[in-house]
Each structure stands twice: as C-alpha cells, then as structure tokens.
Image (tube, rainbow, N blue to C red; front, side, top):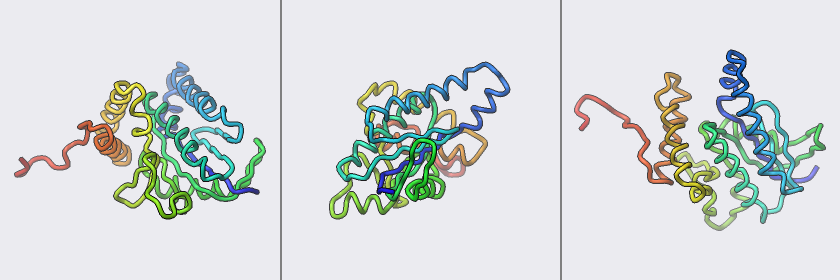
Length: 221
C-alpha cells in the first residue's frame, strides 16, 4: 500500500430521496441521484491518478500523496459540493492521508477508515472536514490557503462556497437560499441545525442574511 489522500463523502438526505422514489415510483428522485453520480465521475475522471468508488449515498475519492496536489484535490471536491448544492442536495465528509489500496473491486485502506472517522465523528454539518494531521502535513509552518476555512470549533473544512462563488453567483445565492429555507424550519433538530449552519456559512462568505434570530419574545428588541 502507498500513502494517499482519501476523501469520504456522504450525501445528506439520501434515504429520504430513496423513500420518496419508492412511494412515488416517478423516477424523478432516481434520475436526480443518478445525475449526481454521473457528475461526480465527470468532475474527477479527467485526472487518471484519481480513484472513485461510488455506492449508495457514499463516495470515496483517493489520489497518491503529493503535497502539491492537495489544492487540486480539495478544489475538485468543492466543485462536486457546489454541484450538489445547485441540485438542492448537501454532503458532508472527511479528508485524511494514510495508506490506501484499491483495484476497483477491492479496497484495503487505513486512509478510508480515517476519512470515514472524520466524516462520522467531526463533520456533523454540510462540510468536508480536513483531518488535523493533514493540515499539519500540508501547512507545517504557514497559514492555510484560501481554499480552507477554520471554524470556531477548531476544525478546518473545504471552503466550497468561497471556491465556487464567482461561477454563476446568482444561481449559488438562489441555491443557498432555497436549501436554507427548506431546512431551517424543519421539526427535526438535526436537520434544522444543518440549515442554520449553512445560513451562517453563507452569511460569512457571501454576505447574505439567512441566519434566523436566535431569540424571540421577552425583552428582545
């Protein structure tokens, strides 16, 4: 096995889309998810050193470790996140660096285990978190590049809105608005917090005004 960058991505709301497709039988949701998988291949396939594994709501992307390839690697991930956002979908994930092997049908990977751990334990919101040891490896004594954002919880994630904000900016703002509005009023706390997080992120990067007031009533002015 050789050292690779490995990203594990999870499309949020996938089960809900599958359930809707089963109930409706319209093919609408199946086509949407199929488009997303096809777009993933389109974004990542031009680089022959990249490996992509897609199954259900999960995507694994890997490439041999080379520090100079880190920015192109995470930029491609940002492009996919933006595509999902324009499709009214979100994803979260983790990026790790460790030993990794895949031949297309068989995968044996410490990097995948690490990336999955970051996604499941740290990402929480619609963001792709970069493992701390990757940050230390790529930026040992310099500030992180503009493609990376540090949040107040100390975690670094790929700035997918910032990276893609100059491409069809009106579409981006409309996509964010629609997704935020559909999530932030949900009765499910875990869904609502994802919408509020996206509102906070958009307000910080795009200077929008989507974050709902935290308090109402009483003496709040």
